[in-house]
Length: 187
Ligand code: CTP
Ligand code: MG
Image (cartoon, rainbow, N blue to C red):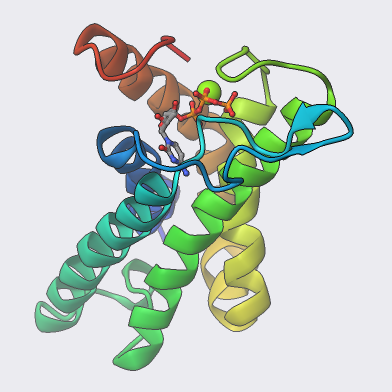
């Protein structure tokens, strides 16, 4: 199989995990997930993690994923370009969206423990927390799907593509959000 196509499929299949971060920026602004509580003198997660962002983000990623999954099945995409068939596909896209924002919250938890204020730049953590969360949760719930699409044989190229392109994409989207006045920092 053409390796460029494998790389592209890796990014395409990851869309349900990419969308929640941008959607959370649009939906955010409400009650913080940690309800303002602190732990050892520092916020548990901080004001940058809200319930509306979390729920809106997961809903947006899952909705897009379901629409795309239906399209891949309707148009008979090759297996490499699908989230599986039927209910399994819905489960996988939900796991990607949920894991993405759980990873993002884990990143915020670590940043607060390190004494970084909300929005403080944390290279690597900011770009990869949601990638690790999405792949981790999905691997836990659907190990065979993750193995066949991101690990086994040539599909490892899909994982490499994610690790290379996601930070670039993440940064680009954040700069757009910043210019639109939706995001406080361009990272
Ligand atoms: N957001 C939200 N709820 C979430 C995730 C994100 O409301 N669960 C919104 C917040 O408005 C947040 C913005 O999306 O400020 C950007 O997210 P992110 O860059 O992850 O947060 P930061 O503000 O940088 O905060 P942190 O330092 O905790 O990462
Ligand atoms: Mg941030």
